[in-house]
Image (cartoon, rainbow, N blue to C red):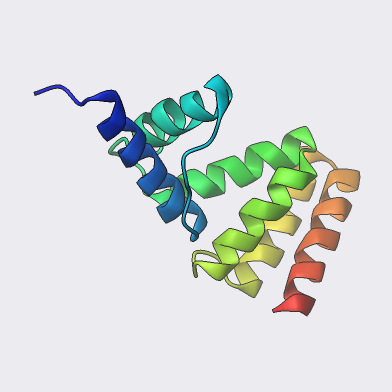
Length: 119
């Protein structure tokens, strides 16, 4: 049996809530719809990797690309959800600094230390 568009959207919103730790409501526009229906209902829900593994890959990619706004959110959620503790976050900084570059690592370190101060 095929999912209805409403069921697909509900599954996507549920996965978004699971990934981020807060309740998501439906949003306007095609961009939000594709995000919920494809990225979260399909991609984040695939077997083979759990949420923590997917988030760790995303953290590496975001750090390498210098996308620090989204990176800060992912680090905060990973810490809040218990996926990464302070020691793991600091180890990520050291590891990624050698692959993504020292300036990127320094910015990442600032994000991590700010997060650790606030927790």
